[in-house]
Length: 209
Image (cartoon, rainbow, N blue to C red; front, side, top):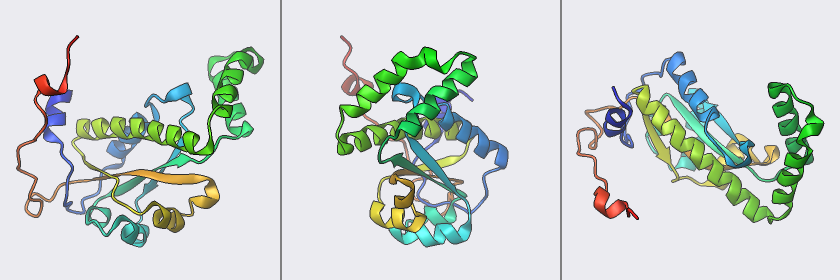
């Protein structure tokens, strides 16, 4: 099926049937998330892939006990970095150098550009910047899930403080930002499974100049 057909098929699934997403499909979705573009390319977030049923039950109260958390197959928690360190930047520069077979010293200008961009932002601005990058990856994951015919529900409705505490994110310098639940729809329980997709009409959404 085409990408547009798959996007018309997908919706924010409200009830899931507990069926596991096959490992190959999961890895394809995760690889698509890994390939998502981000500002400067640093990917300043971590994605926690929560499959364990006990851990999903533990974090469910922080996500207001929405049924997809326990009925789904995997819960992906996109957690933004709270800050950048010199080690983050050095690791990124060295990684580029290794993959492209060039000396790290030749990337001095890029390193200076990155550190300058970071130095010019407050901690609040840096966190917001990083969270925006996580949303780009979220969108890529949604499209990839549709391509795999896996239902995916993005979620902002959760208590980040409680979720951070449950997953020990504070100690890792991370802030939970957005959630993506993967699984398969329960068509009998989900009142939206057969509903028409509602979007603004193109002539309202797009302004062609």
